[in-house]
Amino acid sequence: MVGIFGCILKEGNAAPVVHEALKRLEYRGYDSVGEVTIHKGKLYIKKDYGKIGEVHALYNLDDLPGRIGLGHIRWATHGAPMQVNAHPHVDCENQVAVVQNGIIENYAEIKGELENLGHLFKSKTDTEVVAHLIEEKLKKGLSFVKAFHEILNRLEGSFSIATICVKDSDKILCAQKESLLTIGLGENAVYCSSDIPTFLPMAKNTVMIESGEVGILSERDYEIRKFSDWSQVLREPKIIDWVPEVAEKEGYPHFMLKEIHAQPSTLRTTIRLQEEYLDLMTTFLDRAKELFLVACGTSYHACLAASYMFSKMAFLSTHPVFASELIEQIGKSVNIDITILALSQSGETTDTLAAVDYARLHAATILGLTNVIGSTLTRVSRVYICQQAGPEIGVAATKTFTAQLSVLAQLALKLAEKRGKLSHVEMKNYEEKLKQIPEVVERVVRTQESKVKQIAKKYHDKPFFFFFGRGISSAIALEGTLKLLETNYLPSMAYPVAEIEHGVINVIQPGAPAIFICPKDDTHKKIIEDIREMKAQGASIIAVVEEGDEEIKALANDYVEVEKGVPEFLCPIQCIVPLQLFAYYMAVERGLNPDSPRHLTKAVTVK
Ligand code: F6R
Image (cartoon, rainbow, N blue to C red; front, top):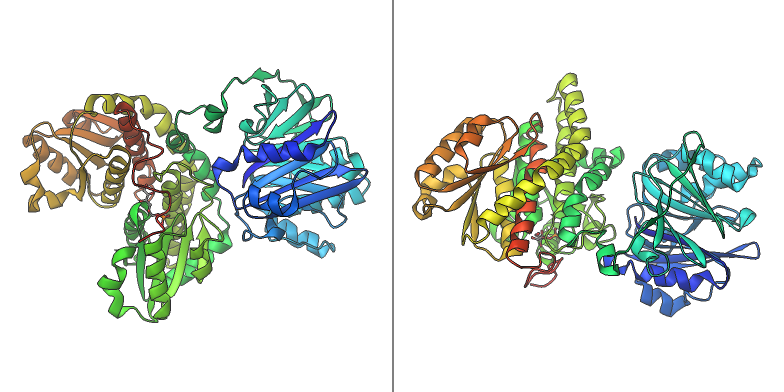
């Protein structure tokens, strides 16, 4: 995934235009880059692993001939970051080139069929199947356009694709399903891209291609059709007058807010992970004699939430451990019987890697969950899963956290099934609820954002915050605190609320804001008592409640609502969203930039 770009110029060479366009996507983070052009019936390709500047210095990305070109920057999802896996990908005959942003979920099945027909694959990517599928249709005598049309209904997943072919060398064909794709109409060129900033300096007139639609681009014209019935779609161009800085954030003022809003989409991708990866990891989890969940920061909070999921769903007890404490805490007992599930969205956090190294040296089995294929964690893990959330730019982890939670929830569910802990009916019900979680998060953001904004306005000058939960929600209380700490530099503390009796109660001052996460799970009755007690101390109660929970609403000074009926193991995914928004709007109210908190970097790779 990450970004695709294509252009047809009236005159001149496309390659430098593609190169410049890709540079405008650099801010997003990527591991590889590639370009392709067509000239006199031949494809010209340059691609490699590395940053655009490095690849350009090695190969010169500007000297490919031809007026038509495609480009791609890649964030590995299938296949390690290597030259062979960089886009564009071609068919066996070098006549079709394809770039893709997204995930083609059923590529393994298609690849098998094509290999049986004699196709030779060079890469480990999902994208390459598209070039070979088109080739197969061209062999049967179909035109390029017809071939593209016929293969689109075979592709499952969410993606935007652009392709060119030497047999019809004045066109770019592009299509999208549940992904972004826009046409740009310039004076001297037509463009298509997954990211408007790529062509913004050359074209302000844009036409969106919607999910399930194809764009057929030629020098002077464009046409949009539906891939279901090939009917034509008439859509007027719109003028986009974003300045480049706003365009990168797709109109949001900060990346953090853009990434909070991106969560329904990233969750859609993560809940469609390939079964074989989940099954393999589940087998290891099931066999683990003793399982430690190891990570830092936000990833540690995902471990904590996972410990409740694994125990409640699959009757597997686990031990969450801060990576930085592993050697001191359990070092002497690490041996061949220990399994470590290490979580790190970057896959490069020094403390996590040090813990993993230590455990490997003591013969433990290492399992990894990360957002970066090719990261050190993927290299040192016996088995790893990539959570497929795409690059995250805001320093505060948001969409990578909910992606971690959704993978862990899927593992808990698989493990419960494997261990026979759920009936068929329960299993079906949970699977259905899992499928609905992106829409649930979408609704929580849509309906609660303005309320959270008001709450942030009301409390923004408070000097100290408390976050409380019980059960699995204690992990979310901790994550809510971390978001506030890192983006607002405000002291705050989080506890499983029963712990307050053991000391914290002494520091609750009248008017102190106490944020309670209180879904209607088994802890609900107790948490009502906790809220009453805290009110008696004079705290101002801000509650995250399920809709219709009148009892807590009546007790709270302020509340935001999440959806009812979401099972306990999935509830953290929706409950963290208002807290992410709270940290964001608090920072905005307090005049801070939530995207670049002081003293913090995206990956902590120093001691
Ligand atoms: C918080 C945050 C950090 C990271 C921590 C671990 O928003 O981003 O606390 O969670 O540094 O990073 P990874 O997951 O890359 O190992």
